[in-house]
Image 1 (cartoon, helix red, strand yellow):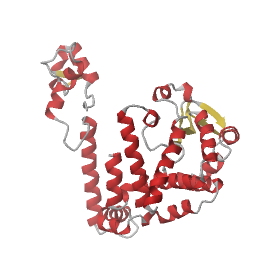
Image 2 (cartoon, one colour; image 1 turned 180 degrees about the vertical axis):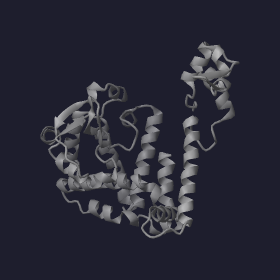
Image 3 (tube, helix red, strand yellow; image 1 turned 90 degrees about the vertical axis):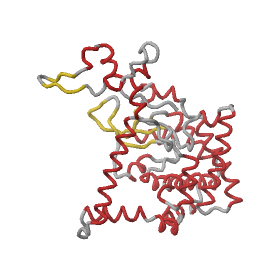
Image 4 (tube, helix red, strand yellow; image 1 turned 45 degrees about the vertical axis):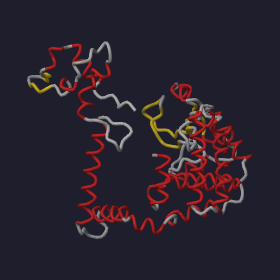
Length: 337
């Protein structure tokens, strides 16, 4: 994979104004131009501008064997990780007083680093949520469970329910709803006819089966439900907008009264209840793709409850796989990573 671009705008200035390559003037102060030394002068910008701009940096910073891409953002993130680790390590050894922030940070870090305990507990940390899902007998039960799980940010049935600046009124905050609820990146993965997509879909169904099995479903049942979960996601994907259609901001902005989102789009989901689960009140909601939520309502209504349970179980365990046993984490990483 080609590395991420690095210094395009700065190097463009370097190329356009050669006299500025020795130093950059900031008032009366002079300081070295950090970008000039990263330009690959052996390449003409008219032949390969990317290589001209970024060539020397990538020569000095090759993509590590453990990574699928690399850029300055990754280097910065690695430094942040190192600093965070030191903060956590120091807190865990500080012997801080009970109830202090340092004590809480240290205990949380030690709990997270105890991989043996995680392996021993297996799926146990999610027992309460899994029982809530397995107790669902009706579609109303399913929706009630979804609403209770929503604050855990699992992304079931749709991708986004979040508070953000109103895209048309930046001085106001609004609730935003966005299509999704898929385990694969976008709709094309579910419908593509090429061999690559077919291979990915086959691997995904096997992955769903394995994750269901690891979270308590008998292996034979997990295999059957895996295909049905995939079929349910396919019904959602078929009503998702294409990636290119999501780039049009105005076409993905539909502000509606909260009650109207329930009444006109998803009669099974009361959005005031969803808002209340977050402790917020919203008179209106910006819906990105109204047709998706209409279709979602139909898909929930026609899908057997046991399939909806399996779907929620899979997405719950997937969302928290990295915090569970090594077996679950490894299965999740091998597919998602």
